[in-house]
Length: 459
Image (cartoon, rainbow, N blue to C red):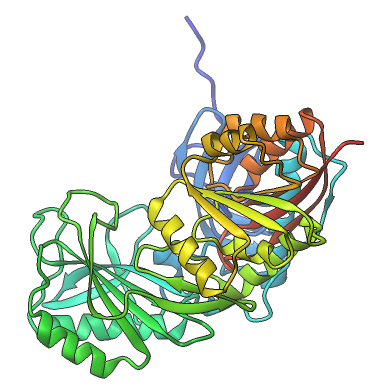
């Protein structure tokens, strides 16, 4: 009979341990007699008391009870709902330490997963003012004591934590959400209930142009028609300065996906406008537009630098979205080709090219791993390829195509250090060398870190 392994800790036991590391999710890591415990809200260098909550074969989870020896990098989180919300997992850590930890996460992924120890990994570029940086809020709506509430979900649940302000949101977004909650409740609109599937208002989405001040409001509803629409619109337009657009999206499905398929502008314009650098962008209700425009300019400027453009190059932008990187590159390139799988995004990209009077950009709808080989077969040869894939990284077929095309440079923009490391290893195996990686803090106080990497063809 197989002997049962005895663990050095038991469930509900209180233990003291030193925190020696941080996971990529921002959780403290400590050990008791060699057994790993994950302790949320603990910082490396701290000695803490924790209660063991859950045990696995090789590790467990514990709740922080007391800080016996506090890190000098610990700060008081300014958000009143920090512990319930969990959206900003690093608020208890000084901003300088957050940046150091993010650099460490990138270094660890590149060396451990990608086996890349020759590239220069620069310190993470942070923000001078790491608060109020988000230009878009997506807020689920619920009910409490006869009124509407709106906020973010409590950690690991669908229980809405009502909030008056989110400290990483632009103040205008907070104002929009508060006005919608107040006015919608007063005209008799009910919140959608996930269990009964009754009620009308599911989500409120607010978008603001940082440089233009223009505001878009999107109401996601559970019915074909917004109840009390005329009165609601009349009162909202009088209450919200800068409001340029009110949009209704219909989602009657039993799903966690926010948007449904039908979207209608019920007041104002179909777009608001904003700038990244000198480039103007039209933003619709469904457009993907980077949520931190200040750091987006930093990120794209670094991508442009790594592209090394002189004005004679042909560039391909894979996963181009609404053309944000493409139009940045088009300022210095001879020709830019952008590809994106979402038709609406390509329609926006073409509109943005016209908006900026750029005629050296061409966009196509489709999967990058299919369109780029087709371009290659048509004789299009890229000097530089820029990729900015989703979190899952690049499709393997696309990487194989890049290796076959042999562009002189590849600029890889990534929101996931682990898939970045995996893909860089594949490209290095195909004849490329990674020179530099620059982490950029697009989402202060969260565990996320964006990166841009520069590769060139060997020899």
